Amino acid sequence: MARYSRRCDNLRKRIAKTEANSLLVTNSVNVTYLTGFTGDDSYLLLMEDSAVLISDRRYTIQLREECPELDLYIRAPGTTMHEETAKVLRKCQIRQLGVEANSMSLGLRSKLSLAAPKVDFIETYGLVEELRILKDQGEIARIRSACRQASRAFDVVRSLLTPAMTEKQIAAELEYRARLFGASGLSFPPIVAVGPRAALPHATPTNIRISSSPFVLIDWGACDGLYRSDLTRVLVTGKLPPKLRRIHRIVLEAQREAIRAIRPGVTCQAVDQVARDIISKAGYGKQFGHGLGHGIGLEIHEAPWLANNQQVELRPGMVVTVEPGIYFPGWGGVRIEDDILVTRSGYEVLTDVPVELEECVVA
Image (cartoon, rainbow, N blue to C red; front, side, top):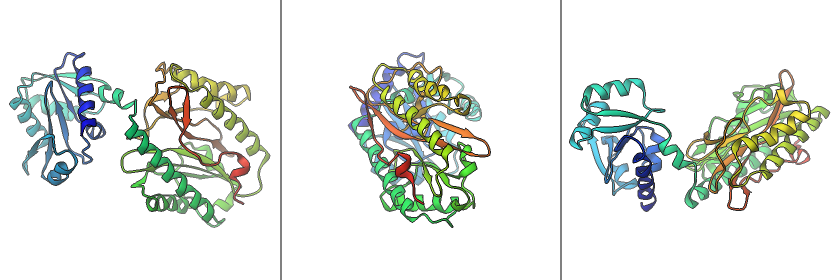
């Protein structure tokens, strides 16, 4: 529980730099980060020297198990969340309330304003998310676990591949195997894209069989219960096309050089530029249409962002993906993705799935 107390104290320091003297945390992921509570439909009111978690009777036992030291306000059945939250605000004599502008809906803001007319609502941006950027040792251990679960699931599914399998079947097998290895599920609905469909960076699995093309792109990750992993590989399932060999070599070089550029003090934009320059010099700059990577943790996409105009400097404890890609409509695409921990001296690759094209042949 000391971990959550420290996080709340760090957040209070950030709140003190705003015009607010308290913060209503409505983003459920941020509530989990600050309290350890894994349910939903609950808000955390963080004040200068105390905190109250506002929830309902469905979670009474779970709350006592996950955050027994936290003060609770359990709303009664038939009451609305905004009405009960307003009662807590009045009881705690809140006047200058920070709200999470990126997650609070206009509807909730309007209802709270009507229910608590004496409260001055102050918009805040990214106060908790800025804390979540740096992972502590416990969080890093959870991400390592998610990486192992994803790797083991992929190894098994790869060994089971047959020409008759469809994208949907591969996706289902990935989730099943990840759960067998201890994951609560996959980090996100997996991308399984055969041949031309690999040109869609966020392709949804279909009934297309892998025998319809000599390669398949698979983007997946495991969730260990809270923390997530994110990987992408291209598997060769037929006769290796020369174009695939050429494009894969370029993407792999871009990824490796970008990873080597990762170290404290380097900006996210600079790392992105390393990969982008390699792909552009090879003549495929227009075919690399997304950012190089993103942070992972409680969410599959979170800060920091490895992309153009991102001047955030990398710091030890950040965990990011590095995933350059080249895509051709009608032919397909290649993306290679791994999870990288920023260390004091540079970086550590947390994922260990084979990446050389010769290692990815399953035909």
